[in-house]
Image 1 (cartoon, rainbow, N blue to C red):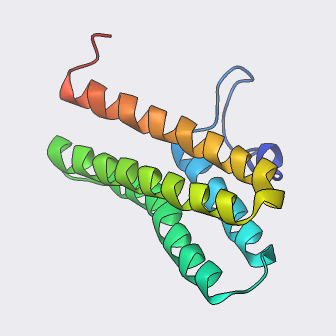
Image 2 (image 1 turned 90 degrees about the vertical axis):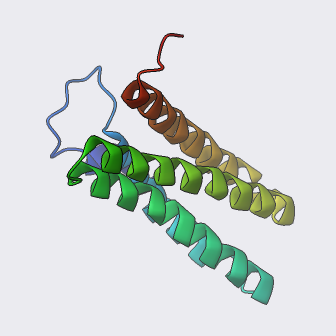
Length: 134
């Protein structure tokens, strides 16, 4: 991801820990928006881009909202919405990958990051529900 390491300078992280999921989601959104701005304009790409921007920015927005929720149930609900948005983002990224085979490598990087973020969110949901006995 572009400049992600330098963007995390202000976080208090030790060298072994990964950036918080909300920061990862934020910078994923930024990177995808920059990527979409470089694509050739076509009406179909505009529609797909709009959908992708909506769902990918929704991931981080719902995680941030969860942090200020007033109950465990509300917190869980925001995380579930974030997970659904991550799954939708995968759909649109796979579509772009088919439409722009020359951009496959960069899109694969986005897909990997969305997948990692959705796994973190999914694990958090299972933990909150008390079902993490795997």
